[in-house]
Structure formats: C-alpha cells, structure tokens
Image (tube, rainbow, N blue to C red; front, side, top):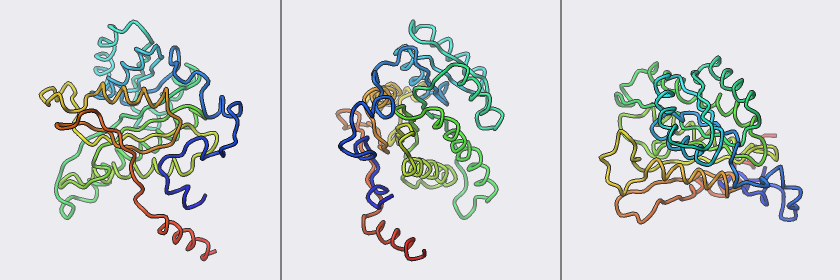
Length: 293
C-alpha cells in the first residue's frame, strides 16, 4: 500500500479499483443494486437496546429491516420489545447473550447465520469508567477496562465484518475521548482511542471483499432518556440514527468522521477526521521499512 493510500481516511470505490472500473463490475461487490432499500434485510445492532442504540434499532425497523439485537440484559430487551410494538414495519430479533464473551459471540453468530445474509451492522457497545489520575490508577484496573471494552470490540469486528462482505456497511460509534484527553477517565480514553486505532487498521487492510467501514465519533452530549434535560440544540439519538441511515443507503466509502450538535450550531455537523500525519511522515516511515529490508 502506498503512503497516500494509508493517509487517506476516505477511500471510495474509484480509489480502491481505479476510475475505469465498470458499474457492472461494481454491482454486487461494491455498490448494492438497491442500496436504498432495507425492507426485509438483516441488520445487527450490537448495543441496540441501549439509550442511543434503541434509536438506531427503531430506525432500521421503520425501514422494514429485520433487526437482530444481542444484549446480556433481559430487562433491556424486554423494554426494547415493548417500545418497538408501536412500529408496524420490520422485525425485531432479540438475542439474550453477552457478546463480550466467546460463548456469547458464538451465540450471536449462530443467530445471524440462521437469519440469512447480513446487510449492515452497527456497534454501539460501550461502558463508562472514572477513577484516579494516571499516576495513581492501579495497572490492574486499567487492564480490566481494556479487557472489558477494547478486546470485545476486536472480537466483534472479527465476527461481523467477514459476515458482511463487499458492498455492505459496518458502522462503529465512538466518543470524543477517542480524540481528546480528559482528566480522571484515562482508562476509558485509552480504550476509546484503541477502538479508533483498530478501525483505522481495518480500513487500511480493507480489500475488494470488505464491507464499507465507518466510525462515527460523537463530539457532543446526546439527548437520550437519561439526558432529557439537555437543551434541544444538542444532537439527539434520532439525529445519529438518521445519519447512520444515510450512510447505509447512500454512501460507499471507508471513513472516520465526527458528528455532533450543540448550542450555536444550526444543524448536525458531520466532519471527516483529518489525517494526523503528513505525507512526508508516511514516506519516511515506509522508507524506513524498505531500508530495514
């Protein structure tokens, strides 16, 4: 791969296979023939019973999709089912399992295979941690946070991305801690940054048979059930769900973008994340690899 190819955070079909590739060649591989249609299509929303995830689940149901939602919480799945009863379209497929474990991941995979081909997958899984400063937090506590949040994301991508295949979409939601340091949440921030780095490598290693990969980094508070007192100027769960719908039905690119909205913003802002290194940096890096032999 060239330095330019690694620097870019957005890789389109033309960039991957050349400007002269025919539409016929792309159909079924890169661009879905009826990309905008989700009726009866299988979608997985990992974390789809959570406060942001439920908006995404409801959006896909409203589009007529069959939405498989794995969760270790029977209560959350029950509440989601009750909420989804008001939606006449689609089909909710709840799977009570802990995808943070190997056994739970196998249960999710078995449920997916039973339902047929996978059209899209969204990861909304996350956790929260707050503790002592970097100099005071026990190493074992940091290790537990990483093992509980980062490694399950790695396993999830290894299960979902091969099942998706070319022309489909994998979307990961992340938080602003993946980009900015905030005191006393170091272990969580390191985990979020590691998830973002993993997505970068997934994009760098993507091939013709890979799905389109997007990471949405939410850079503001989100109005959900537990944050209903936030001013209406802030981004909502529905805003995020609608952006995911736009990506799945209209876009064909690997990308890492920020999404957010707050007081003073006229609309939801979706901004591509700029490269963190220059072309010269990458040329020196690849030159070092070549010189090392």
